[in-house]
Image 1 (cartoon, rainbow, N blue to C red):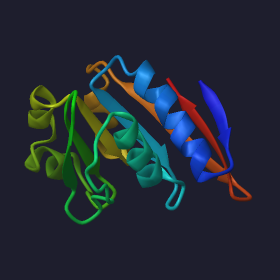
Image 2: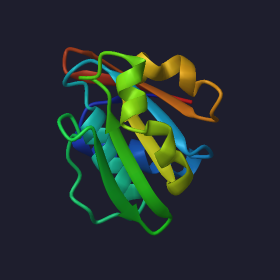
Image 3: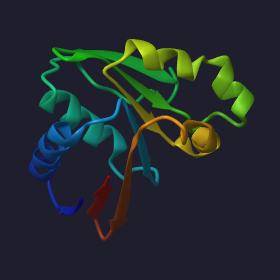
Length: 135
């Protein structure tokens, strides 16, 4: 599914569609700095019924949220420099205890994640217009 987003309302509508389409417990989320990864995550958590305040896990590396469907873990691997650092935070240990794990900047560990069933989402920005592909 590919969509062009112009406003926060568009994010909300898109997140509702994604929430219905989630069939895997892992979402790899890609986009440049400022593309809207955390904005999407905020919208998705609301669509999943969470009332938690959603923020970027850039410095915490992982944030935990609650939904009626189960726990959602939101990771940001941007500052990690090696696969060993990812393993040190125990990324894969979260998978068994989650309804969904959202991983921003998954590239450092993407090859290791390929054997897990997952969704993939890419946000591209041009002139303040976002093009988002989800599969």
